[in-house]
Image (cartoon, rainbow, N blue to C red; front, top):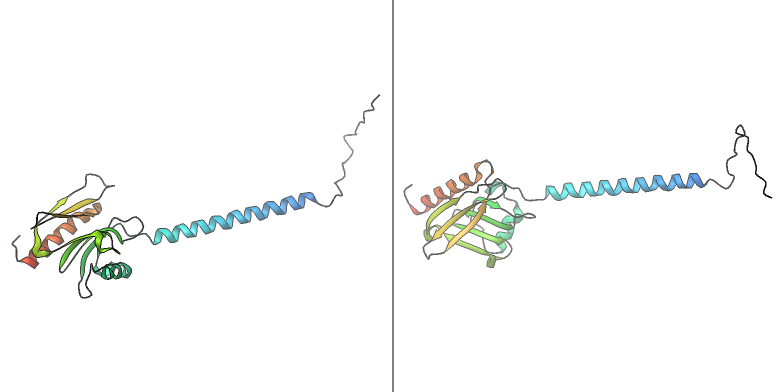
Length: 185
C-alpha cells in the first residue's frame, strides 16, 4: 500500500541548494536581450546610412550634382572636362549613375548606366528638331522628355514630376536649345 504524504500549507519550502540555475537562466536571458538590441541598433544605423546614400529624387543642377556622378560621366566620355551640366535627373533607385537624363551647355544625354557610354543616347543642340514633355498622370511615375532628332530618332529620358520639376526641366532645356541654336520661342 502506498503512503501519501501530506504537506502542511504553513510550512515553507526551502530553496534548492543545487547552485543557482535560475541565476544562469537570468544571465543568459539578459545577454540575449542585449545581443538583440545591439543587432537592432546596427541594422537601424545601416539602414539610415543606406537611405542617406540613395540618390535624391529631384532634379539637380551642376552645383548639386555629386562629384562621383560627374566623374563617372567624364570617365565614360559622356561629359567633357570643360562641359557644364545645367540640369540632371536620375530615376536610379540605388545610384544617380543609373537611368538618367541631363543637358549641358553642349548637348542632351539620356543614359542607363553612367559608367557605360554604350548605354547612352546623346545629341548636340544643332541635331535637335523638337522637344516635348510627356507629363505623368501619377505622382508615382516620372514624366518623360522626348527629344526628336534630325535623323528621325529620339532621345527619351525620365524626369521627376513632383513640384513641377518636369516642367522646370523641360522649360530650361527648351531655353538652352533655343539659345544654342538661335531659334525663336
